[in-house]
Structures are given as C-alpha cells and as structure tokens.
Image (cartoon, rainbow, N blue to C red):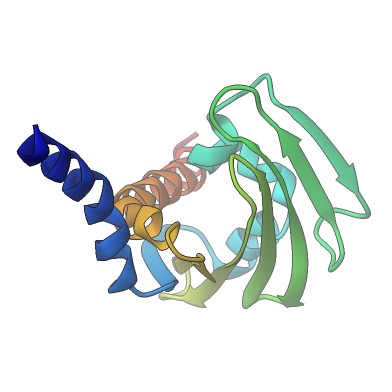
Length: 177
C-alpha cells in the first residue's frame, strides 16, 4: 500500500517539480510573406475587428460576446470577449502604433485564469508588392502555471501559423479575384 501511495504522490508532485525549473517568461514569434503592398497589409492589421477574419483564437467561438471601447485602429481601443466555449474571457487593448510598421497590444485574460500578455504585429516591405508580417507574443506566467506555457508553446506557434496563413489567404485571394 505504501508503494502505491508513494507513486501517486510522485505523479502529483512531478509537474510541480518540473515547473520549478521552467522559465516563467515566454516569447514566441512567427512570420509569413503576404503578396500585397506593406501599406495595404498594415492598414488592414491595425483594425482589431479584422481579426475576426484571420485569427484562429477570435474565430474559435463565433457566438462569443464581444464589446468594444474607443475607436478601432487607434491607441486605447479595447475589444473584450466572453466565450463560454473555447476562448475564455478577457480583453485586448491597442497600446502602440508606429504607422506603417508596428502594432502592439496588451492581452488581459480573466478566464480560465488571470494573466497578462503582450502581442505585436510588424510589417516589413519584402519587395514592392509583398510584405513580411511578424506576429509575436510574450508574457510571464506565475509558478506553477508556467508549466502550461511550456506545454502550450508548440500549440501557440501552430495557432499563429494558421492565423498568418489565413491572413495571407485573404490578401492573395483578393489579388486573384
């Protein structure tokens, strides 16, 4: 009986021990090349409402409640969501815009757990008619939630890749129509 108890305790304790050795900060970034001029891509990205058409996370629950505050495409604009299904609850605020170059946002999650993250979208000319788009995110997670970030890093990268592919498709479909 004591061997079984030791195994159970070890299995329960193992994730907590692993989390002690994992970083609490995370940062990931992905990119793609969009066959459209930088000006057009940037002007599309700066409006958070457009994420409904390309962001895997925003598209995850079309029935989520969304509220907005401020003027989309400007610093201080906030879009808040509440999803009973996949996205939890939180808000995203545009915290900085360098016209034609960079959009930064703060993500404040309230459910399924509280956390704050930062995202950025950067556009870089890649020839006259194409744009390299970088999408990244960073933040910190307290112990032992930092284990979730380590486990989810691959999934977050995949979700960013899917979202960037959706963005690319929007522009490249528009160019063939």
